[in-house]
Length: 293
Image (tube, rainbow, N blue to C red; front, top):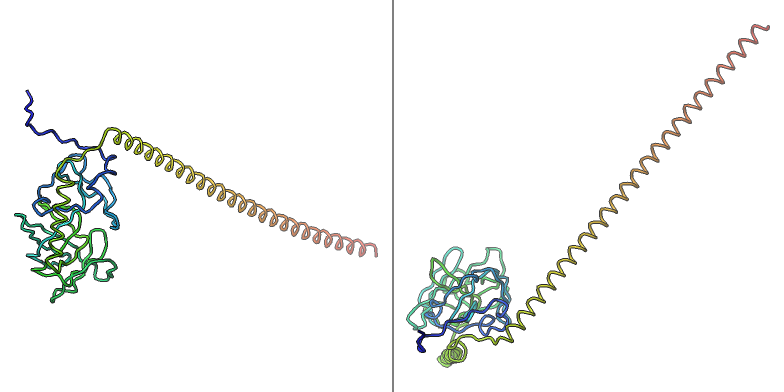
């Protein structure tokens, strides 16, 4: 017997519905505690590639998809104060505290020694190298003005290390005033109330439309791939035929040269034989003339 107070099981939608997700393609505003509470689901462990939020360029592939309720989440935004900042040989590791009852570790790789920073961000000095870092998507992140005690707004992807959630940094900006910080908390509250407080729902007719679009996209990709293979085969055939023609021409030219050389040799031999015959006839004539005298 079902109890009407029992929670309704969450419905997780297939990947072809993610194009209308209110969370997957945006910076999801979360607290550090929210990030640690994100769940994983079988089938979304890094086998899908989804575009980043608008304006964010990335070449990250295979990053995990996490879930809050049934909301798919890949990109997050957290606001808090830096309480620890470690400078390692190949990366920066910061710890952010947002007073949510948990802290969040934020990682950012350092660029190669000869790499030039060409991205966006801000950063940190105070004697700690040159403050350059590189986001997971390859953009430069400048940490020159970031230090312990700095209030920051961080954006990045969700990752894990030894079972603990962390952020792979993409963007960072300093919160300079209490008004800016209050605005960030207001945005967080509004997003959680309007989006994250209820499970994601996709109407059946929308699901059907998305499925048909996904099937159409798949067929177009397959057709494009088939045509590409055909073009490649035709190009390979043309190259093969061209090479055969060139080879045949070289063989013909080679045979022509051999034949010409053979004709020249025969001509020389015939000329030599004719000269020898003439000499012999001349000698016989001389001999016969001498005998006659």
